[in-house]
Length: 221
Image 1 (spheres, rainbow, N blue to C red):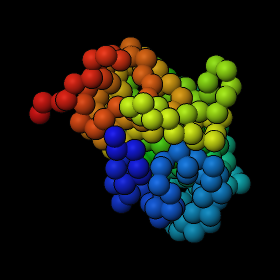
Image 2 (image 1 turned 30 degrees about the vertical axis):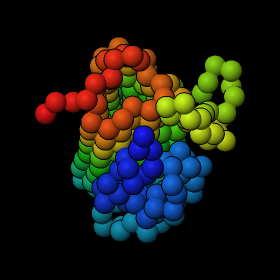
Image 3 (image 1 turned 180 degrees about the horizontal axis):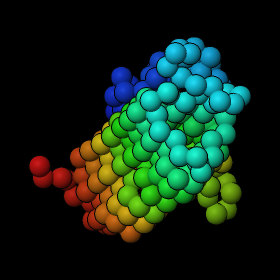
Image 4 (image 1 turned 45 degrees about the vertical axis):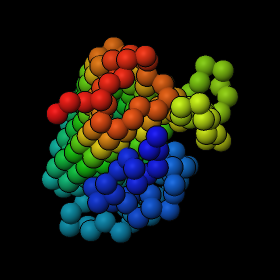
C-alpha cells in the first residue's frame, strides 16, 4: 500500500514541505520536529507573527483564547483558531486555517493547513495532512502497552520505526469519526474515512471507508 510522504501528502500545504522532502516515510520526520520549528520560527516575518514567549510564534491573524496553553517550540499559522483550554505541549507546527479545539492536546506534531482537531482530541507524535479532520473525542495512541518500539503493519509486511512513540499518519482529506482510537503506527491513505467508535491499527488504503478490521470498502463518490 501507499505509505510514503509523497503518497500521503501534498507538500505545498505546509511550511514543513522542504523538510519532509528529505524523508521517505512520514514517521521518519518525527524526531526533528522540535528543531525544525525553531529553525522556521526564526525566519518568520515579524510583521506577520508575534513572538510572545521563547520559541513560540503565533500569526497576528490567528485567534488564541486566553485559557489556551501554548508551550514552545510552536508555530501557529495564519487564520488558525486555538480554542478554550487547548493544551499545546510543544513541538507543534500548526498550519494555516486550522482549528485546535477545546481541551485538545498536541505534542510533537505537524498539522498541515486546514486541519481540524476541534473537540477533545489527543494528537501526539503524528502528522495530519491537508484538510484532515478528527471527530470529537478521537485520539492518536502513540505508545504501545508493552512499551516496545512501534512497527508499521502493512499487509503482512512489518516496517520497524525504531521509535517508542509513533502516533498516526493521516493523509490529505482523511476523516476520522467521533470517539475513534488510532493505535500506534496507524497510517490512513488520502481521502479515506473512519467510522465513529472505531479501533484502528495498521494501514488503511487511500479512498476507502474503514467500517471495521474486516470491513474496509472502497468509497463510492
